[in-house]
Length: 331
Image 1 (cartoon, rainbow, N blue to C red):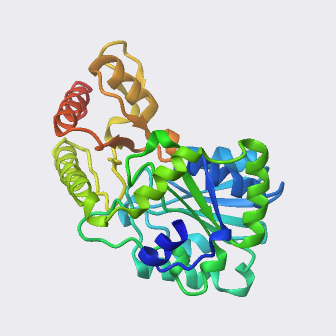
Image 2 (image 1 turned 180 degrees about the vertical axis):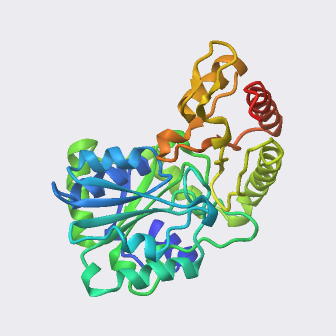
């Protein structure tokens, strides 16, 4: 069912024997990195990144190489930026598309530019881990393009996907890895020792999800786009806060750097707003709004909000955020 879906929707033709069904997308990432990486290897992790990437890389014995991206270019990774950190030790590049936490979505031309770089002979040893867990959640009519569909990249791409985001099946813990045969077999050996297999009940539910007509999910995605618009509009009306509109996923990642610094003090206890972690602690303790600090994502100027909730909750949360920031008296 997964192979048929990849062929039909993503123009990626993979034999079913090259697909490993896992207990969630995180396990797929864990298995493939442990199967592929050794001590001394490097894995490129563009920042902002999902919080688990660097730690899973370290567990594999490899070294995470954090590559900062520019918010002015909507955090898109350029070939020039990437080429500056590629070495003979580079084993894997992690490409989360759409990105958690920024909502960045790569166009076909942007992916093709990266593929052109990786097609050079000196980079033939490098694989791309394409985390596409949010690929169905795109906005403004934008198309998600799988990196494996780019000419010459199918055998260089390790696709990770799952059912939690697109089908709201988080608790089912169902994901998959699609990879070249040799790598897939090594990842399968790891899974057989870790947890044997994904839950059979969840697998049957996944088959049913893949059999759904795409139009069944359209109202859900349309509602998320409306919530995205509401969130971005409200955030950009807060003084000194800027936030680009996410093209995918269900997060907003506003820049709140104007409210960070040793000179900015918590009006309750006088402590410094020295980081986004300190800011988020102040906001939850004193204003009852829970946000994720950008420090956790390797991006110290931002905070992450999820708009996968009700519009009422979005408005309440941003009301509290705005009130909390106002009380910091930043001029």
